[in-house]
Every structure is written in C-alpha cells, then in structure tokens.
Image (cartoon, rainbow, N blue to C red):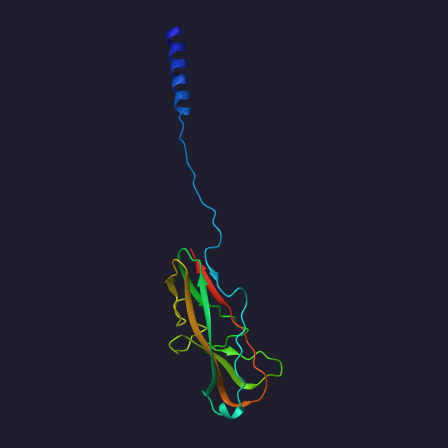
Length: 171
C-alpha cells in the first residue's frame, strides 16, 4: 500500500511542479504629445478682392485669385494631408458653394494648388491634387494654395462666403 500511496504523491507533486511554472511578460509603451500641428495659431480667413460682375459674365470665368499658405510644424512621422469633403460646402464638382445668405448668384469658389491646378475637394485622400504624403521632419512643410471666384454664368452681385477644413493625419 505504501508504494501505491508513494506513487500517487509523486504524481501529484510532479503535477503541481508543472502547474507552478511561470512566464514573465514585459509590456512597454509610450505616451506622446501631439506631434504635428498646423502653424496658423488657429482658424484662418482668406479675403478675396471685390470683383465687378463684368469680370464674371460667362460660365467658367474666374477672377480674384488670392494665395494662402498652410504650414505644418513639429511632425515626427510621415503625415497625410487632405481637405475634408463637407457636403454642406463642397459641391459634386469639387468646388466650394456660396453659403452667404442672399449672396451672389452663379458664383462658386475654386481652390488651386501651388502649380495652379484645381484641387478636387470631392476626391478621396491621395487624389485631391495636393501633396498628400510627405515627410515633414524635422520642422515645417508649407502648402501654397490659391482660391478664386468661379462663374457658373452671368454673376449677380452679392456677398460670397464658404468654408473648408484642412486635415492632418499622422502616425
């Protein structure tokens, strides 16, 4: 009987020894602050010059081209940049609609990139015709754009207003 009891205790002890094995797991991570910021200090307003309706008499006429720059600073990784396609202010053709109450008629706003090509505001990220993915190390990257009046036909006098959002996404 003692040999059988000894064997049972030996098996039990061996089972407990296996159950007592241990594995150490290390977990590492990092909490960082925002690594990219738009170097405007806040929202910006681009003021176009007043134009006479005679400058915008037929479809596709443009006038009042006004440059503006968006600068990105402090990025530590590759970032992507795009304009938000807000259906309240961007039409199906990729231009900004006039949202001014009792505003000018037959007028939209067109965004142009640095080379003067049209930025397609309805395009998905990477297909808007702006620099979409650049390394902004170590300091800044500037994006030069222009905005201009765009005629859908004979302009009717009034105010012009719209808005858009520039998005910065980074890892």
